[in-house]
Length: 113
Length: 113
Image (cartoon, rainbow over all chains, first blue to last red; front, side):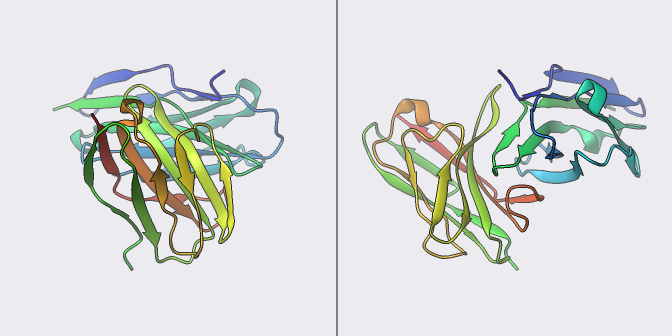
């Protein structure tokens, strides 16, 4: 079974629209970490955020915000007022105790000017 | 500070050939890992290491070997390449064992004919 599910394979939005990328995870550990990474068309992987399982506070960084809900095992990512530079593949990832990382299959976001 | 470097950037092999993908980091990170990225599959962990002399298997270890003789280097060996190993390979390192932000190399695109 997938430990990290990103059900949205591809999303297209028009510039300045808000968009939410969904991430659902599965773990039996009480201590775990969640991540989001961005992979622009150039191919590199860029770290966006890390959250541990004991910190359910939502976080905002500029136009980016993250909503962590343990009750629904979700860690969703919202981009406000999207820009063309936000076009990329976004990956959600889970790390449990034991040093294993699990990535979702990614959501490809296209922002249309 | 070069971060995580990988060589080569591109490689074409014939079935049955062997090769080593090189990975080095200059951040004194203890944790290093190898992933493969395939279309629609996200990133999957091949092997990881929590320090020199210590390695362990990830989700998809078959067909790959690793060793970690120094903190800086973590080479990935393909002993007998198969077409199923055609993929993009990423090396990563982290300051905080398997729970911290991972810094990724630029990737190696490998094609096995």
